Image 1 (tube, rainbow, N blue to C red):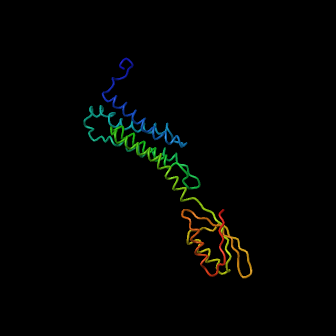
Image 2: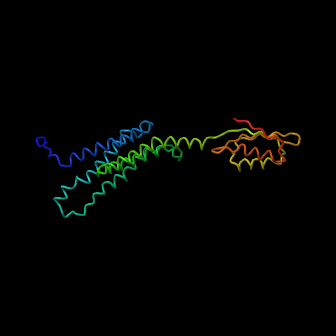
Image 3: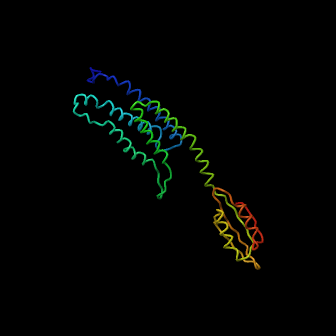
Length: 236
């Protein structure tokens, strides 16, 4: 190295190489999962964030030591300042992965969180906490792989709309009470058609429910009322 004008390798050089290679592997696993789901911050972004934060942690550990050895009067140097700026500064990158439409967050929060965590992993690997970083990476990858599917399943189950058409023959004075009963049980009225008959009205309610399905409970309640002659259910 000396004939190239470079200083000799430090004793910490192999430690630095091993830690950087480890964070490449760990951040790459998380980035690969994000890449497989076509997120804007994928494999390369996560690796760069992880390696960059690891490098800055290594800088705070080893980079200033020779200078401090030459200037012992600077014993108040705080090596944790650089890592703290990494965590606060990574926010701009995470914010860039969040897509917002008309004030409502659409997607990207998980990717932003994974970028933030990868920055933390880089710091942890840089300081030498290898097993802690490996365990944390396993938790993150398992969370992204398996809890995402569980979240999508339950979210779809809770938000799925069930549509029905209820045709009810009843006395005119019962209309407001019927509507109130539907709302009480969680049925939302999307459309209502009313036809006047001889002393009775024919109402066609297009309703939907989200989550639990209260349609049969509503029908049993309505059928028991004296002012209702007939209740007929048609699924949409």
